[in-house]
Length: 92
Image 1 (cartoon, rainbow, N blue to C red):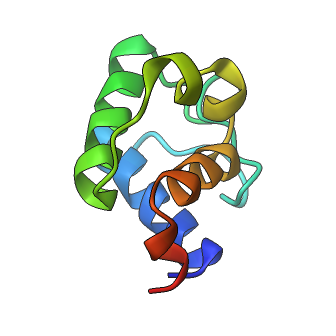
Image 2 (image 1 turned 90 degrees about the horizontal axis):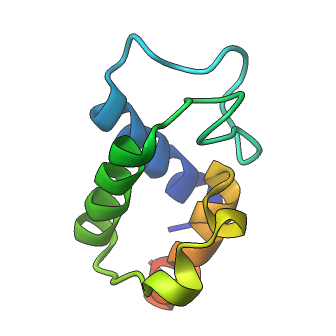
């Protein structure tokens, strides 16, 4: 799975959590923010996205290292963490 495909899969995960009516304005890409200025995920929705990503991509996030604000800012930063946690995705 290349990074663009992963970004599309992440977009689908977030959309399942928040619903199709709540999408960010403009083009959705790696720079689309998960919180302020994008999908505006609250803490419960972010947790739901994290749990959904763990199931979808066969990974386990480490709270101390993987769930920092830096890693959860945009679709791209979340994709990077997922690829680090499951390198097989980049070979699929």
